[in-house]
Amino acid sequence: MSEDKVSQNDTKAEDTNQDNNESPEENNESPEVEKKPDKKALEKERKEIITKMLRIQKEFMELEREKGVTEKDIHHNPQGIVKEYKEEHEKLANRLVDIAHALKGSIRT
Image (cartoon, rainbow, N blue to C red):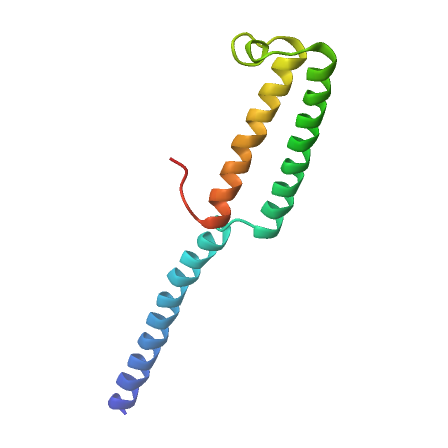
């Protein structure tokens, strides 16, 4: 009878070890799932950003034709609407690069 108790205790210990081994693995998997980007959401955001950037470029080209904006106006001392276009375009371009890295799983340096 003592052998039965020992084997039952061993079985319970193995079950406990298996439960303990599974818990950390499950805990490790959960954060990995959270770390992975939602590719569909990123693709949607990427398309929206590209659409916005094209709109900005089109509006800027119209402004350039109407007002005669020069390279100096854009790069050396942007002011007013030119400054707004430039800042928004840079912000969107940087986010687009971040999304590309997230989709490919690479790190931006």
